[in-house]
Length: 72
Image (cartoon, rainbow, N blue to C red; front, side, top):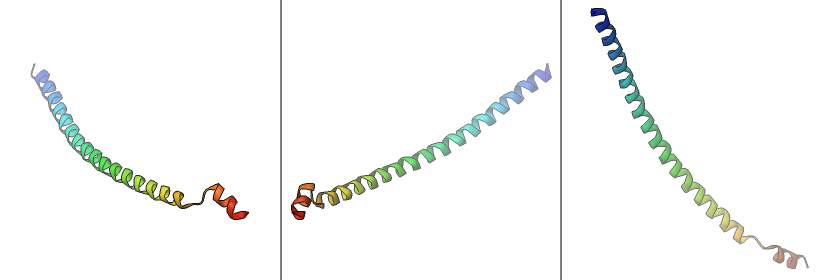
């Protein structure tokens, strides 16, 4: 009977340790997710800025019709 209680106590202790470890891992994963969300936002902003710069440069290029007129 005592060994059954000891076995149960060991299982409960193991479960408590596992829960503790999973909570710590969950905190770390939430922190890492927050970092990635912030990084993603920064990268999206940089892509948008690069897109605007490329669009502005493309708008400055002469069209095909302008190039043909220059050659004539």
